[in-house]
Length: 157
Image 1 (cartoon, helix red, strand yellow):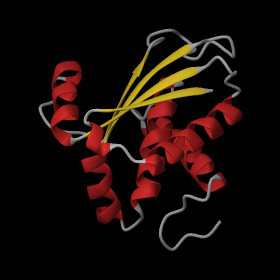
Image 2 (image 1 turned 90 degrees about the horizontal axis):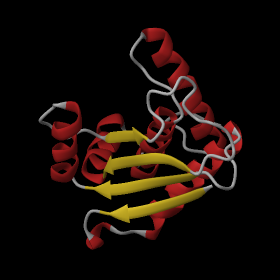
Image 3 (image 1 turned 180 degrees about the vertical axis):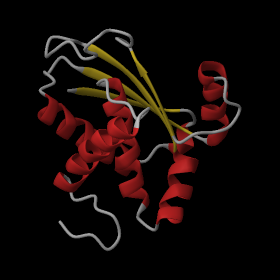
Image 4 (image 1 turned 45 degrees about the vertical axis):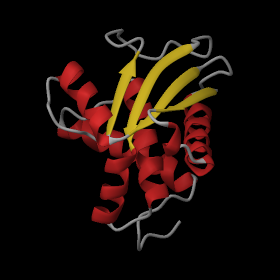
């Protein structure tokens, strides 16, 4: 899988962010059978940037933690198989990630990994509109995070 990571501002760039995101995306690619041509774009930004996108695309004038833009959205099955090249874009607010890590009592790295897998699952067709869908998505998120060792505080592998 090819993961292209860009930043709203150059000063946000950290190698550790890129390592976490690539690790999560590659694990997701392995689990969901995404081929080597699968491509995902991830933008790391601040609250003001993601707020603008949230307002434009979701008509919600507030920052959010992660937005996903699947290129095949609306297609019945979502992901079309290993020959699909461009899957979509994930936008993650580093400000929200830091705040939520503190709020939930776990590391920033775990929160960044969570937001990455959450965004990736949306691109692959998962959603959380119903309680059943939410539970299924949460199981998938935790499965991937546990495989990579990103557990919540107090949890063990």
